[in-house]
Image 1 (cartoon, rainbow, N blue to C red):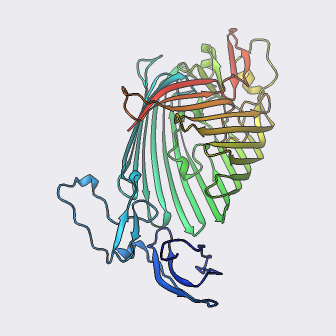
Image 2: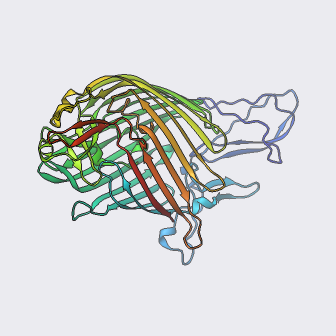
Image 3: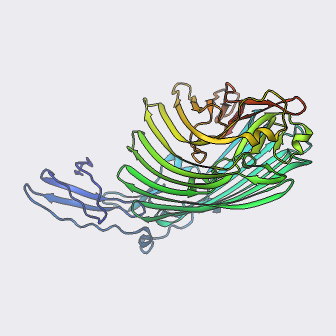
Length: 515
């Protein structure tokens, strides 16, 4: 940099820490070296003459070494104990440690860094998915305990409709960010759905304990390991442990990754605290509770340009899927409920059953490209296998008959989605359409959970600005499978109509207040 702080040239070191700057005009410069988790180093008044070569060695000190000489800041009078934080924090977080010219080390922070407590209250309802119907009151609290720890609490209470007791979901998560980019995260989830019926027993209880650890093995190489302990209790009890592992290697703008997972809901450290509906992963088979799981192996090559949002990726995967969940709806008879091959949610009017286990090998590709400052366009395609329904059944049959006739077959998927934001109104929106081979009832590449939902889906988030209402109020609309596509109806033994579908239509709306 020049004395006026104008940058003349910049570059990154190689894996051995060597760097070279060529064709620099003669003059007086300032050389600055920075790296995450290290203190910045500055060499001032560097004189460069014409047609000369200068070797400058720089040393970056770790943050822990700074504690040896940085004086401790005394607690201010009247300062609350909860607001006390260390003066010096990791340079990967804010506040950042900066060095002023001819001055001491100081801490510089931005306005967003002062918000250590965030909360959101949501009131929502409508025709929703299995295990998520009715009118819900959601509460979420996120708190940063200091520069390296975080806590998340969520609560979801659904008004009772078919029972005297409400459905409850509780989530508690804790994250500890360690030195050198390492972190540990653990999340506990408890759900109680008194309305879900299986056989003669009504009510489904579930819990999940998820743990994940992120390790920076060396520059550009990261590993993630973790597991999910998942349990259900209704007509019977089932508990399982589902581990995962992920290895990523970054080379410039290209990333190579290999992952192994056993549950679609827990495949990486970033998925540990995502919103999930545990009841959607369980059903009954021959009178016993079972969960959808398997063995997923995937190798991915992705390339993206920093700052522009352009990215593309190609993945090759192999799955062994056990007890794939098949969704449906209608009003099952008592004989259907007592068959021991389904769970029924009367609030949402939907049911779930287990299909035939199968294996699949395929490819998932994605291209993402911004179409302006506030518009992103994404195209996805995938090949593999999925469970397909048999031909239409004109005569009444037992509930088990369509399940027994389902079979895996080769299938393809293509999806296009667009998302953006309207600056004038602040509206955030997302629209997507996902096509899949006709007659299929399970998704292609079921472990690719980031793909859009089946068929036409819409999502709107509109800030509400009104003098009568506090700031932070938003209206929410979430629509999935708007046109009710992909339904495979059949008549049950008593003549009532049931159906299976990859995704049932759901329309949900609500209000959210963030503070």
